[in-house]
Amino acid sequence: MQEQVSVTGMILKTEPVGEYDRRVVILTRERGKIAAFARGARKQGSRLLASTNPFCFGNFRLFAGRSAYTVGEASISNYFEGLREDFTAACYGMYFLEVMDYYTRENNDEKEMLKLLYQSLRALLHQGLSNRLVRYIFEIKALALNGEYPGIPKDGQPYDESTVYAVNYIVNAGVEKLYTFTVTEKILGELAGIADGYRVRFMDRKMKSLEILYEMNEIPC
Image 1 (tube, helix red, strand yellow):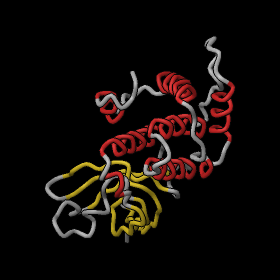
Image 2 (spheres, helix red, strand yellow; image 1 turned 180 degrees about the vertical axis):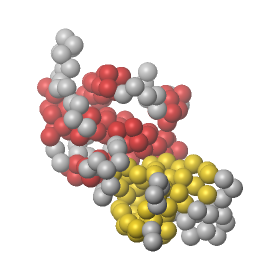
Image 3 (cartoon, helix red, strand yellow; image 1 turned 135 degrees about the vertical axis):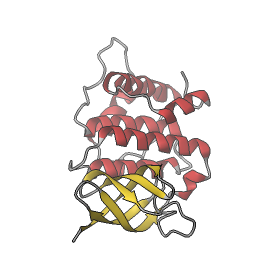
Image 4 (cartoon, one colour; image 1 turned 90 degrees about the vertical axis):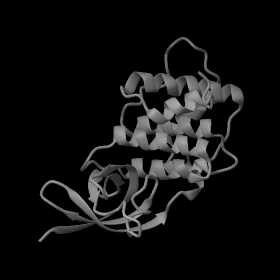
């Protein structure tokens, strides 16, 4: 008899398998990042059709096989439908999903990463926050949670005191308190330089969604 597992998490990515199935990657609170097959999820009328798309957050009941999980049921509490109505915000959101797929691992404790992802997607839908600021906060905090934060860059650039304060706040604050401030364009530019420098230094994968944002001129080169 297959073991039944109940997990809470978010769909990071999905890909078609065969004629009607899907393979999904889920970042979970209980088991880190896992892959699972959703049988018949691409059939019209399937109860898994809407619940196995990227951004879906909720509870997933899985069957654990010898080499893979199978999705039995899904109860979605947040589809992040607002992202589906805003292409630019959706691209930022897809970038966040790609970053989490890069950082997280199976059977790791990824609770804080999942919390960061959830709160960051919510922040993209907040009218008072710029997408760029949300991105830089997300990138710096993800680096810190992954244990790679190297401190303020010692590249000879005289960073504004407010920039140093903002970076230290991002690194040390709880995830639920991250998206509670705004900055001037000058500070935003300095945060951009710091976050971009960290990304080039610590990430060895090109993110497709980020490249789309550059092509859209959404992110200054």
